[in-house]
Amino acid sequence: MNDDRVTIHGAVETLLAGNGRFTAAAPAHPNQDAARRAETAPAQSPFAVLFGCSDSRLAAEIIFDRGLGDLFVVRTAGHVLGPEVLGSIEYGVSVLGCPLVVVLGHDACGAVAAARAAVQDGTSADGYVRDVIERVTPSVLAARAAGYTEDSDFIAEHIRRTVDLLMDRSRVLAEAVTAGRTAVLGLAYRLADGTVRHVTARGLDESAVPAP
Ligand SMILES: [Zn+2]
Image (cartoon, rainbow, N blue to C red; front, side, top):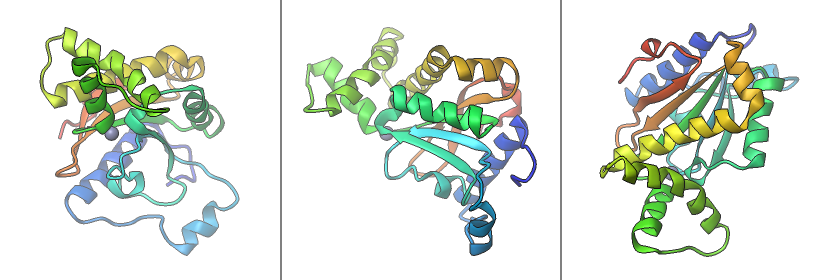
């Protein structure tokens, strides 16, 4: 499917179809064989950048039922952003030509929970974990200011703000979206049943994204 340039909608459909197979317990495990390995060895042409939380239960190629050469994956705890993350996403968009950037958060995210505890109780963390928590904190403060109390609302707020931050900080990505070359899609993953919920999008007709 990566022989020709994939459209934005083609990328969204491929991704959501894969998640549908995964949640239906009917994965096809595409592009995971030796032939695909040989085919993609000379060059990669992934159809999406997947920027998600590092949580061990969010294994990208498994939950979207894809294989080698399909997804350019960038993951950090709480999907927090720094220069290396922005550079990696920009590489996927401008060098590899990915038509889709997905921001993938999830329920019961430890980074969001830790940031909520830090705000509520003034707790802190050691080492660079503190840096992760501090980068999630603005989302927690915004969610609290909006009067949210549910975990799902905090998660959605953090996904929305991560998409905003990406668009704000990366001129390369913002220009690709404006030019219609790339879209950004924020999804919330549910650990218990493996489904993804559409939270926000840029450069995409949102009615084209089915809400599971
Ligand atoms: Zn997480």
